[in-house]
Length: 313
Image (cartoon, rainbow, N blue to C red; front, top):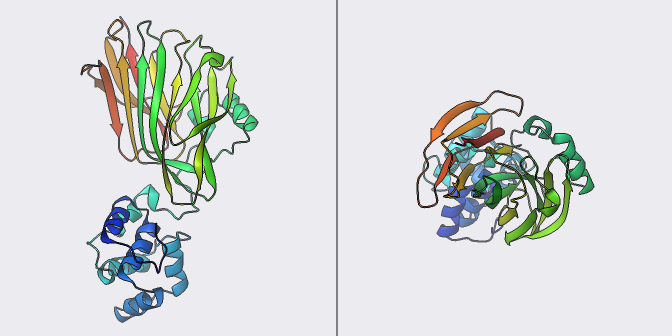
């Protein structure tokens, strides 16, 4: 992303307005139009809105986010001054990605999302991984494979994340096996834009955690695309797959595929606000397609749990 004062093209501006976050879109628009902050301040004042240069600087750097009514009025006028489509900037203020670069999205604790949280916390401690890894989900596409013995054969993820603090250079992936699994035999694979770092597991809890190391250090507001997979197949019959979200995020797509030799009689989508909460939003899913699978798509997923469960013959 170009810095303020360096001209950028319309295609880069269009991309910034489409994906956000707010401060990057504003900064790109200012550069594309060649307007310095003092000129923008003057034009706002001509329209009856007084905003300090410090505030404008904070907005375009992501240090603060306009929230007060007078500030939102200024954003509406900025769209006019910068010759942007109506709501181009304002709509970004309605998304989790539009929060100030140093501010985390709404969050849930690890303990509220996991039954075996103490084991996971211990493993994270061994990796010296903070509770807040500095990343939240923009888009996550996950595919789960169930084998002929009804076992969790493996899962792979295509993940897009955004940093909400500077210096993030890794993601810690957590894998829960089914009853009887052997975490020591579960393999971790880096499939895109990352490499496997340290791996730790807890046999009693059936859980494994792995560092996925990026090729760069992210600044607050930057996004990163990477892929990884877990090859399991060590546990007993699988009955569900769940995904916990510590932070409010973007889109989550979960697909579960079944071997032709072991098809379930019923599949159900569900959600939970925490691991101890009752399940809600239940919806029956129909097996379809050549791969005999079911899927769910969650837009603007909030902190909590979503998953798919199934019943066998």
